[in-house]
Amino acid sequence: MTNQEDSGQAGRVDAQVFSAVCMMADAAAQAQRALEQANTEAKNELLLAIADALDTHADDIAAANEQDMQEAFESGMDEGKLDRLRFDVDRIAASAQGVRHVATLPDPVGQIVRGYNLPNGLRLNQVRVPIGVIGMIYEARPNVTVDVASLCLKSGNAAILRGGHAAERTNAATLRVIRETIAEHGFDQALVATVDAYGRQGATAMMEARGHIDVLIPRGGAGLIQAVVRNSKVPVIETGAGNVHIYVDRSGDLNKAIPIILNAKTQRVGVCNAAEKLLVHRDVAEAFLPLAAQALAEANVVLRADERAYGIIDAAGIEDIDLEQADEQDWDTEYLALKMGVKVVDSLDEAIGHINMHSTGHTESIIAEDYSAIERFTRLVDSAVVMVNASTRFTDGGVFGFGAELGISTQKMHARGPMGLQEMTTTKWIGYGTGQVRR
Image (tube, rainbow, N blue to C red):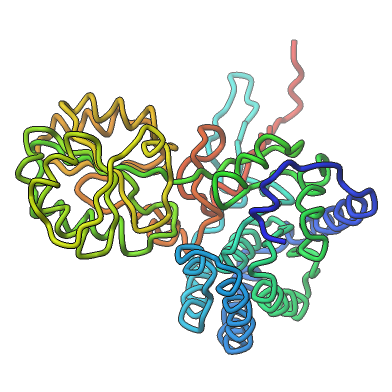
């Protein structure tokens, strides 16, 4: 059973599964309270040991992944999802390196966000504390297992995971390494646990486990994310699908634009920060679109173009181009494939309006040299990340210096954009008095 199946209606949870998941979460909460007392040095030592263990057991994890990959391929999984599912030795090494990077980062727990004295001498500090038990429901992304574990352990949280059937062997092999290392360092294995054995019912139980799981984070396709948002009784941090736009302004450097578009669209097609739409100002469309279309055609990208863009590209006579007429549904579609929507706009404001109407609020990029256009675009586009003359592929916790990420939040409460260590904490107030009473 895949997480795509999880993305259907939650349905009624089996009482025994619900009880088991709640007991697992309660054990995680107890283990988390012990972890919260550990100092930064102890947590860093644990992370470095996990990284070393991942390297040591990389061949075993990769072998498990090969079985998952073969099964997924035979079941018809598309190329983009297969790419996300892949967790070979090189990717395991990259994940281990990410864990080491997390170990080098400042520990957010105990950081003072703000502090001041009241007139009566009472001293108030707002400090960062762990959230508690974090639940993750994610699709065929085995690297997320490592990312979540490392970020949770460093920030003093416990994790309950539902990684889905497609990566079941990979996740099991990875978790075995992580949990054994946790135990070897004197911590409770309950800090990182999985409900994968319960299948879809496990995911449903996590959504129902209010009071046992503190926050739930879905990471995957739009169907999975919206199912969790609609059905969960546990508070949810929404990580969004990526209907990502690149806008080429009339002031844009067209030589810069094509490499940026190619990178954003083709470097990895199955990820949420890959560009899905290309908007081009009418003043440069005649000159630019044939060049962009030629480059995209050579990269085997199918173009879904509006009427004006279609006419310009079709007239260019590009050989072997796969050019189709776009419809209204295209503007709201996250393709996750070698496919791109193309539209000509009359103005910067039309581009901004189109993006704000159709974007999922993930990442947008402007190619421009006009300072006023850049400032207007970055101010008015309502997305978590806005790039200027750069690929949208940079929206990533690792690239942002977080070592890893839980996901990229497209909501506006608590966290927005890539979620790293600080985003995995909440705050509490501590008041230091010397006998003050309120009058």
